[in-house]
Image (cartoon, rainbow, N blue to C red; front, side, top):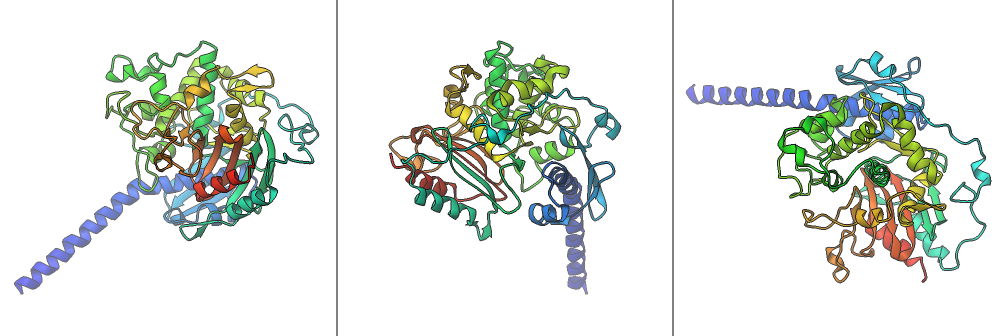
Length: 459
């Protein structure tokens, strides 16, 4: 009997540990599942005007998101999510501001926020030539091999990655600033708003650049973060936030509960959450990709221009100057744009942003970004051992002689790109005069896609 009792006791302890582990996982993960689903379904329904059932099937069907249940309320323009009735979370839609999760602030407080948004010009964009408008030329450059270009686009639209369809939703290809190729997936077209995810980081960097040009911010000065006064974090500079070398203890892991998922789906003031994290490394010594750094930058923009001017300044000083009028940035519950993750725009407008950087920050007679901003944006920090990151842009690496050391070995070393979760990308390849936008649900074989596009340019 004694061995049997020992075995039974061992099994009981094991079952208890499994139960505790399950409860602990649910405590950590369920709010993230319900928050992610509520927020993204809200934006899919009210911003993208998609059917809820379609968005749930395509965007929220992977485990563990599939554990969630989501309800759309057309009366108050909201979506509520939960997991088996637990961890209820609500996202609300506000016209002009998109969707916001209700966290740390009451729904009433969030709904009472007021944003001063600039008016959009009342013109027929289809009648204006690209890039001022959306009218395209009847012919494209003879340098482009149309057959190879079409084949590259066809391949990526039908591509599979790790045995699943990547669901590419948009491809736009610019050669010397002109659209030479374009395709959309089912349910999407040139007017569809699409989610940029971390492409948003590159947008935030451009806004910082505008403020640097205006003399309102200095890259090498300590970042103006109130929580850091009289602490070791007070030495963190604006440049270190841009280069992801702040030293803050932040883990960017979307497969498990981590700082990034806690920030995005459990906190209403994302910059404050990140600013309160401890230092893990001495500032400037270690590269650590962090959405939290970008949201601190986003709050710095707000504090620099002031609450009343914040929203209008953001749109007027960058996007509207380069003929981007579809862009929508979503705020957290505190009213700060989630500069790390939540930007929506048409594929063509994302291409316009890439074109701004291709043109060294110059647009229609105006130097919008500082003259050296793009050049500085594509220089890696000393802490970045792989030399793959600049000012909120990814780099292909800096080894002209050894392609194996590049991020994409078949793509020129001068390529740099804005990159978002699931393969939302704006690739800028100056040496080939290309700007390429690809948006979709899952990551594609990017090296192959870009290689095939490059082969279509017969220079």
